[in-house]
Amino acid sequence: MNSSSADENPPVDAISYATATAALTSLTKSFAIHLPKYGIRVNAVMPGEVRTANWGPVEKDEAMWKLFAENNLMKRVATVEDVADAIMPLINDPHKFLNGNFLYVNGGNHLK
Image 1 (spheres, rainbow, N blue to C red):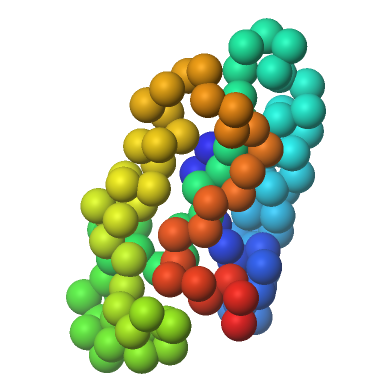
Image 2 (cartoon, helix red, strand yellow):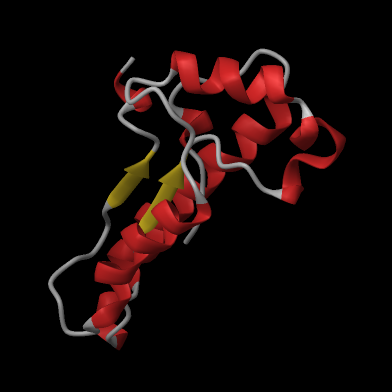
C-alpha cells in the first residue's frame, strides 16, 4: 500500500487527507493480520513530500519546495526515485518475512 506520513503529524489545513491516510494505516494493519494465510504480505510505504504533478498548480511554487527542503531533516525533498527504491526490497522477493511494516520515505521527518 502507498500511504502517507500525514497521519503521524496531521496538517491543520488537510484534515480529510490526514484522516484518509490514518484509515490506510489501519487497513494495512488489518490486512497484514488477515491475509498472510493466503500468502499475501501487506506493508505500507509512507512518503513525505514528493514533487509530483499530484500537487496541482502549487507544484510550480519554488518557495514552497524550498521550505519543505529546509524543514526536512535531510534538507531535501524526496524524489519519485527515492520512493521507488524503498519499495523494491518489499516486492523483489515474495517469500521475504516482511509483513505489517510501515516504511517511511520522508528523510526521518515522522520523528519530529
